Length: 206
Ligand SMILES: NC(=O)c1ccc[n+]([C@@H]2O[C@H](COP(=O)([O-])OP(=O)(O)OC[C@H]3O[C@@H](n4cnc5c(N)ncnc54)[C@H](OP(=O)(O)O)[C@@H]3O)[C@@H](O)[C@H]2O)c1
Image (cartoon, rainbow, N blue to C red; front, side):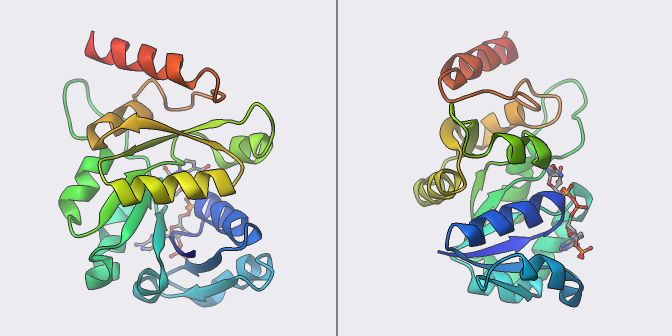
């Protein structure tokens, strides 16, 4: 696959290196692409630095990992290139106030409905992913989406990177995985993912 990484920082840069290691061709982005030379140097010929709109155009799948505060600006930079594009959102919005509010994923869908969104890779710090990657029992990586192709793409990338995809539900379910939700910072292997998700859903609707 051709993968574009919007926000190649601690999380995005790590995922970008792993995608390249798995044989995907990866465009990493920055508002200053020339600063990404050290990241590209770690990508064994599978990496290239681009500006955001070029990387989104290049990509079959976009990994979206800017800081939440910059998310809207990053989407604006991507512009029309987002139309019909699969985008996997790994961002975390600030802890929501008590009471109902849209998930970060639902907010992004509202801002860029022309893309096909999924959520994954947002629950755990990059150093935990690094420690658990490829080790049995595989770490479960929760996926939230209502789009079939986005779910398929997220599943493929999660597997390629050495984790176990676990479907959690649609965009509203992403609240469980984001700050303030019970799955945020929850390290769970594939064998316990089903029970953990059921507990999280029960606790949230109680
Ligand atoms: N760090 C983790 O372990 C981790 C784990 C789970 C989820 N997350 C989530 O992932 C997101 C990124 O976290 P991080 O820790 O990786 O942040 P980070 O290290 O600060 O990296 C963020 C990247 O986004 C880019 N960026 C900033 N503003 C941008 C804009 N307006 N348009 C395009 N790109 C922009 C920055 O590149 P330039 O400044 O060069 O443009 C930077 O490389 C956050 O939403 C965070 O909650 C992080």
